[in-house]
Image (cartoon, rainbow, N blue to C red; front, side, top):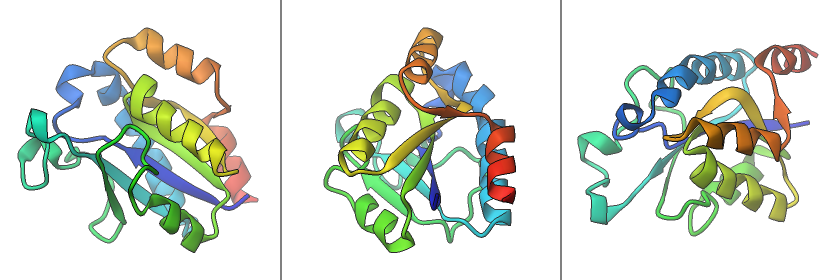
Length: 162
């Protein structure tokens, strides 16, 4: 397994609308720290929606301040739920030689699920990190976790330790 961590749409505009995302951020940060310790790639994905004013340069577009991301971590800007659609994500994943995507972020039933399905279409292995996705509707988190491959943080940590 050659994993890459995806941090999807954890932008300042979203946590106020989704308390579950605030609860997910510590798990996402633990994963970021774990990937960094193991010198594995981390990609931050940010959603653009001009109609809602969610565009580069606006406060809401920025990544949540409490994320452990670094400015050197690649950013992918997307306009579709599927983070692969018309973006550089596929190329980045290929450059890293990754075959497994560990998915985290917002919103479970939209961008996380769309990106997960798109990864399958690309013959990649998408795995959702338990406790690391958010939604306005917590039932959607349970649903998305129930229909996809899921890994706990402790299992991921043990696996990466080799």
